[in-house]
Length: 182
Image 1: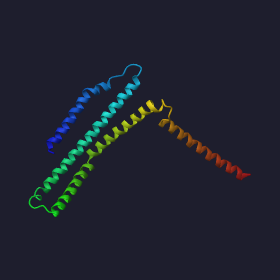
Image 2: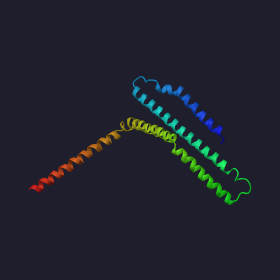
Image 3: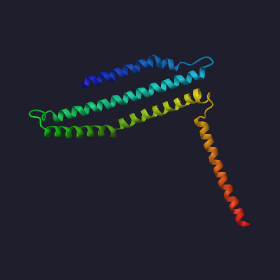
Image 4: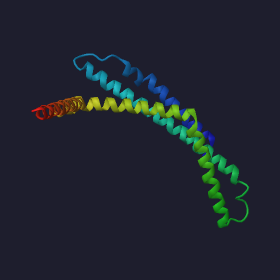
């Protein structure tokens, strides 16, 4: 793959993102009306969160593609002279060693960069936000209507169980003290 191929991928992604923001992005920002307003707003926000997650994922893939292409370029530079002439098993072993070392070095450089850290932070942030909204939609549209416990219900039960255990432990201690006194 040539460098121009990567640039065209980046240009296509940028164009897609700008088109989304100019079209669907504005629809998502429109206020909802009518009796289902709250549900519509929540679904639109969930859709927006999904698009943000998809954009961050695509951006991350493009970054990894560029690192892969840079590593490939470095390998080609290092092995161009060595691949001329007779090819033997030693030549293949040397090529493999150069390939592994070059890819490892290139990816280590990228993974240690601040750009990678901020990219992963943004991706994880959008992923957590997407999971949160999906859980809320699942609870509201499926669990509550079916009278099944939600995360909030289970958390409340666990909290109450903790306090009950603490009370029983305290009462057991008091009973033991009183029975020792008599």
